[in-house]
Length: 334
Ligand SMILES: [Cu+2]
Image (cartoon, rainbow, N blue to C red; front, side, top):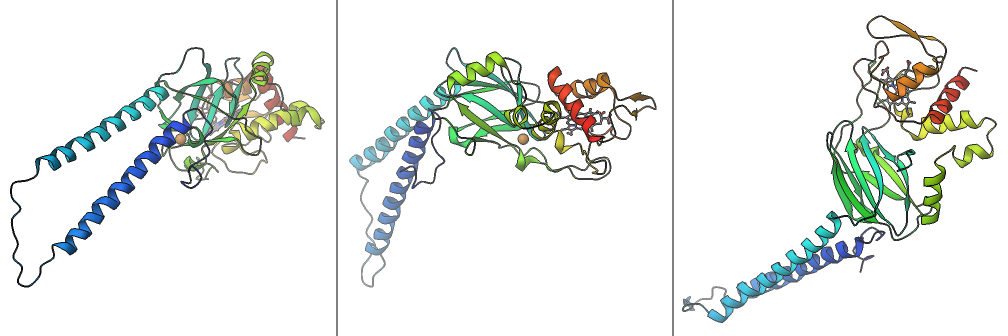
């Protein structure tokens, strides 16, 4: 049934209920359509105009019939309302003891912050068989957190929190994570100061949820996120590799080039570290560790000359992550 209706896989506890409602409404509509159109076509034929046959008025109605066509649909509507409300309440009211994850929508990334302070960008670890609550806000415009496989969707609004919850029912594989989409049109690519186009926009605002065993999530909460496995394994320099990973995974790449040539909406990172940077307002500053750190945590504190009309969102990277980004920047100059 589910396959034939071309619905996405059912990966949360809500999915069967939502699909049941959907398919029930669908088949009620199909049945009503067939019945109504069928009777209509029959009447058109049965009571068509024929030579020599005069139209005869039909008396004064039929009480039994009228009661039937009033009450049968009423029962159906009450049942539909009841079912819809039940599923709605289930989705709206989170149980006690949820695992809470903060979500921030921004043009055009999803930022996830776990309870241990570790952040992930455009991807998040989610424990399986656990009620998880998303506490969501936006740092710029309206977004909408939409996970078709979970059958959940909710607006993400600047200046307020919205929440939703779900319980994932199956582990995911790295090749098939659970996809998050943004279901609110939140802007197309805008030109940088120099008219260049960044390489992302609304339709690319997606994230992957990796559904992992509860024990693995507990370990992650305890030990936090260090450099990713691909960096601790093969790479010669773990920091540089980690920094590059952050650059690519955390959305920096959308706005910053690293080759000294790319005209992206933000300043290029090659030749940045250790050199002088001209700021808006005429001052200049040396790009040392403290400057880089502040530029990431509070981008609006010092604005680079010529970049006054595009806002970099603040990124709450931890110190080790900022160190890794700096190591990566330095490696660009070698
Ligand atoms: Cu969006």
